[in-house]
Image (cartoon, rainbow, N blue to C red; front, side, top):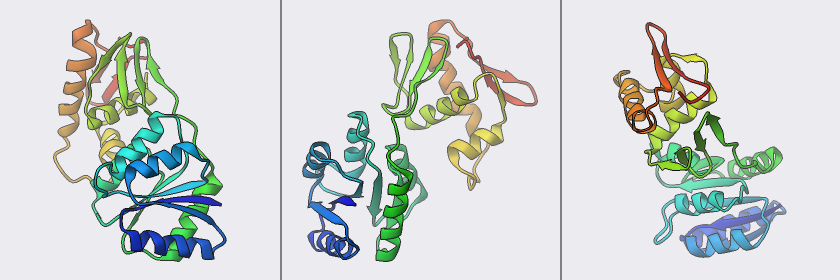
Length: 225
């Protein structure tokens, strides 16, 4: 396997390189995001080990740029941050796995092998309902040719609704899929975000695609309203 390690901590990156080489892997190292992005764009790697917190271009931005350019090489994030929303951001920007420092080398190797076995993901399909469409890879939503600026959370809710267009989805299902099963806040947050989406993807275009099914949940019209 050919692996690219991108980490601004030189000693740690060198240690990862030596550890992976001991497992028979071919390893290249970059010590900043810009160099890592250039190397990942110019060569074919089986996987990328990418540090999150780097000066200049951080790991999230490196991964996001690769995905925008159509590069879907599996990415494993390394980070000293241990928060669920940091992990969510990493996965939402196109990452495939997540490992918190300090980590075990056998676990790192096992996760890299598992990512490579799963293979390179293709670009996610464009989700559509009539003239309403969402490009999950680019994280952009449109009505016809008009781009609709949405926050990351609004995009996630719209993504879930589009994947279940024509179906009734409950508030609990939206919470579980967008906020995660451990969410313990006010469930009315779903109504708030449904309201945000209606104000952005429906009303300005004279549509009513996102409907409320009384006592059951929400349904997005397959034809886009």
